[in-house]
Length: 503
Ligand code: ATP
Image 1 (cartoon, rainbow, N blue to C red):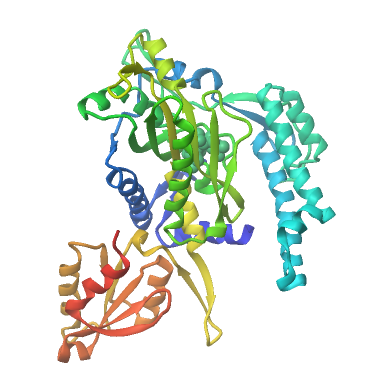
Image 2 (cartoon, protein in one colour):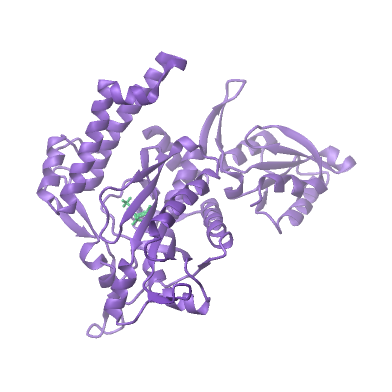
């Protein structure tokens, strides 16, 4: 909900996760900087992805291609002609919106209304509740879900036919208003290309028009044969990459959910023509498992199978996550056919084919891709983890229950007091742990305050050095989630941490 989302945004700033870009100049819209803790969380998510994709699959390798690419790339990929979003202005507020996003939000509200009815009925009927039957027979639920489906179907149809007048008509019929001002005074809907342009070269006459890449995938396609040959890869095989992408997004009011400069983690899997749907199913399942492995609740994910397909795809699904503002796309899995490689063959005049020794034939492989926004994943993790917990004594603690493997700081080492040799012992512990973990030292304020500060940052362990340590070399280890404390030997700290923090 709204409140939770606001809390996430302000927590992210207060605890060194995310700042607005160039904040001293009042920021740059939909552009953000990752702060000292944010950069660590982001790096850890990237690493979690990279290990599972590249190290855990013998037939997947990584690359890091350039952001700037030959401009013909974007003609071949279709981005010059077809990378548009339907834009609508509100005449009163002068605010711009994506028409499709406004309609999707309306549809999501219908879905939420249905969910509310279902929840109410669950409470009412208790153990006798048959959810499937209720969904298909309760008139209100049926109405909401039908409305949701119809609205999305009509929008998809209109966008496919580029019937922008009908998109506008739909907005009027549904009485959708400006989410910020409530005004319903709209302009026509028009298409808007999302690519950022720039120039290469010093003199105006010779300068070449370039684009900042709007997706990392094309850097993989154009390198497909180089990697295949130099890596002696056999189909099926994959190429993975993480890196920045740029889109001049119209809607810029959802924090890091939709940014103008963001990072993607993509993997293109090259397969035999005809086997793509098998691999598409495989990757849908494998990617969902990756998400679930973080323990953020099965109920917070759902698949959304696309009925309307992009020009390059023959099957596509999103993995949606339950963000504070509802279920929204987190990752896409697309069966892209041979569209991209064929297009690059055509525009470059170079063959991009694989000789399959088992079939004894040459072909352009089909591609199944998995594409996830790193920043969006960051938002999913952050918003899910931020919790206000009421304790036994009635006080409330704010705790960031990040999956320990992703936490920016793994342990805080705290001397109980700033004297009697305790700080020196704490520093010694740090010197041993810092080879394996990002750990920090904190000696300011009472230890209870320090615990709370680490709870808010999401640090899974606090290690406290006290006077007993001087006698028997033991310390207190405190666990963030349970707040339980245990006495262990200094030599055991690393092992103890490893139990929770290892791949
Ligand atoms: P949307 O419909 O939300 O604009 P999309 O379908 O255009 O997304 P893709 O082109 O499939 O997105 O990109 C793959 C992934 O990249 C998305 O699932 C999302 O996680 C991420 N992504 C796309 N655009 C942005 C953005 N502007 N800011 C942050 N992440 C993004």
